[in-house]
Image (tube, rainbow, N blue to C red; front, side, top):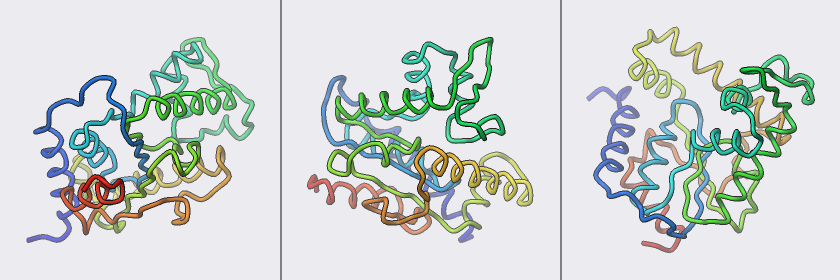
Length: 222
């Protein structure tokens, strides 16, 4: 059994776990789980699995749509800020233009904060990325940091996107830089600081069943 494919199998298993569960009932309150992840560590798949198995709302790309509605700008404008910093953001007040609409960095941050707090106020959600663990007070969320060895993450991206190992490695490095710059720019901290999270989980070692069991135990749901 090729150890390099372990992460891909774990992500695939997480997707199957989530697919077999019924959709959570609308309006159901519950815990708020926020997930920070290294690129390629399977954060979205694990997040969807946890949301399905725990009956929670899954929030990832939907956050972009909510910020756009909140600020009345295009989704393209929001996405240009989302977890990456372009050269225009060297000045946080400099706007980017998409479809004729401008959204300065400070407006994105204000919209992001409003949306994350709104989701948390409703309860019962899994939020992936966007520095949500730094926006919500510790008592209002369970924060997870999903990691995996770089070689495993690179192999996972190469397999998932049909890339050579060299290209996958370059894209992974670029995504890591963008994530780090986003967190440092908007939150003045290091995303790799373990003290910023309640749990750090190596997804190359723990599969979806173990992760679900661990999260349920921490939340007192076991």
